Amino acid sequence: MKKIAAKKSVALKWSACSDTGKVRQNNEDSFLGLRFDSREVQRLGKIGEASIEKMDFTFAVSDGMGGALAGEYASQIAVEKITTLLPRAFGQAAVGLEAGFTDVLTELFAQVHRALAYLGSCYEECAGMQTTLSLTWFTPGWMYFAHLGDTRLYHLPAAADEIKQLTHDDTHVGWLFRNGQINEREARTHPRRHLLQKALGGTNQFVEPQVGAVGYEAGDTFLLCTDGLTDGLYNHHLVDILRASKRNENLAQQLVTESLKLSGRDNTTALVVQVR
Image 1 (cartoon, helix red, strand yellow):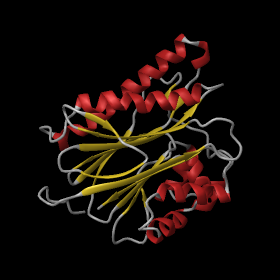
Image 2: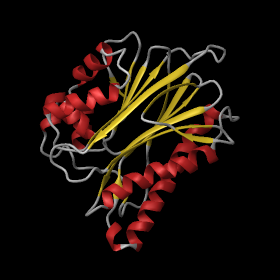
Image 3: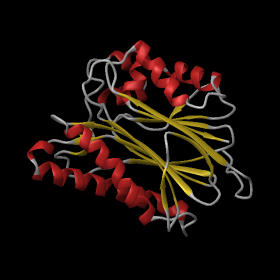
Image 4: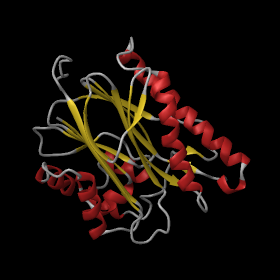
């Protein structure tokens, strides 16, 4: 995929939405949008659009787990850590970006993991807290990502009719699906589909996030979401909504609304980023 020339004017348009759903009493999902460089960090609202020429962007979604409110705390702590750790670690247009992003994002996940594990060991109300995390980092021409758990990152290229899941679900069911042993429908209805093999926090000693990079073009769309969204929507539903709603200012809201109509059994979160 072509890399956008830095001289072109490129903007990102984003929207985010999170809903408790029809069954749960509290929302253990969290999301984050940041605009930053080596000197300044700006938190983004749920809907917006801005140029990417002078500052980098990061967007993230997490889904917490744990007793009482521990899951809610875990997801919030994860996204708050990103606010300080990523801008501090790597400013916009830093030297060696393409070679160094793997180390930066891997260390970021390790620090989030250590913070959650420490709190879980110190406070009874935080015991067992864990969270998933999917994170994107946009620089001119490239999107870097890191992931752990079963939250997801999708890429819908401008000229494509199919949406691609960039992240791997860290579940046995996800492994079966990736290796062609079950289809999408079977994966969605499998009784063990929500049993995670990896997460941040808890008693896990080490974390090994999936890390990658994608070159993007104008017209591309990226979607971060929790498993509550895809519990209600198949991949073709995602494409239909994203393609048919180009003028909608809040695509994330529409995705969540449609998912709740068909499911709503879990907290449901979507964060859409469009390249303009």
